[in-house]
Amino acid sequence: MALILNIDTATTRGSVSLAQDGKVLDTLVNEQQQDHAATMILFVQQLLESHHITAAALDAVAVSAGPGSYTGLRVGVATAKGLCYAWNKPLLAISTLQMMAQGMHSILGEDTAWYCPMLDARRQEVFTAIYDAAGRELLPPQAMILTPEAFSAELAQQKIVFFGDGSAKWAQLLPPQAHALFTEYEINAAHMVPLSEQAFQQKSFADLAYFSPFYLKPFYFPQKS
Image (cartoon, rainbow, N blue to C red; front, side, top):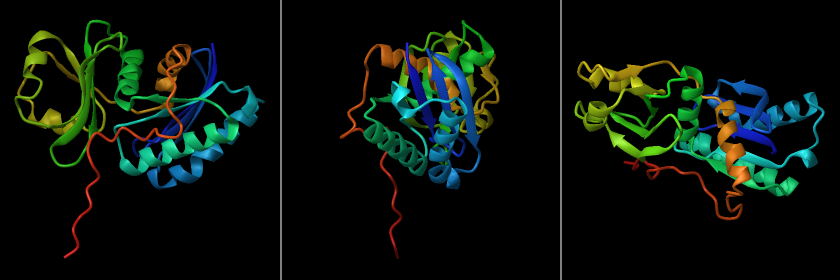
């Protein structure tokens, strides 16, 4: 059992959650992506001070490792790695998509459905994956260009919950489908807590020196004319 600081800045919504033994103690949320770099450390300080916890008492720091926003992921990972270096704590790298699936399952409590988080990757592309209710990966994380035929094989088998900021454009493309369910979702570091606790117990620690975010596709630099 562990006391873990969880950090998510993979999207425009950033948050920090403090958890003890897999249970959320407190969470702070920032809605402005341009403020993530400044607010994450302040949130960490506020959470520790308000719960009278010292850095020495923490067992690990967990971070949402991607995919997601390039800028957001860099901020979150840099913050988490900096804290781990300063405090001599292990780093836990948690898949953003799996974290989202965990969060949506905890909200809906639907054990027979599959969960398909979607993050907007611009144009008709999304970062996505599919998980069952137990969090097992059924479709690996990938950058997918959406077409009306996408997920046809999966939807023929099972009800799938589509959610995340990329799901709206998929809803516009998908023909009427009884097995497709769309629902609202707000990403939150608190949804990382069961996964980070599990990773800690399994001693699944990231290499502080070499770990980098899971971008899924290379950054695009527009050519100057």
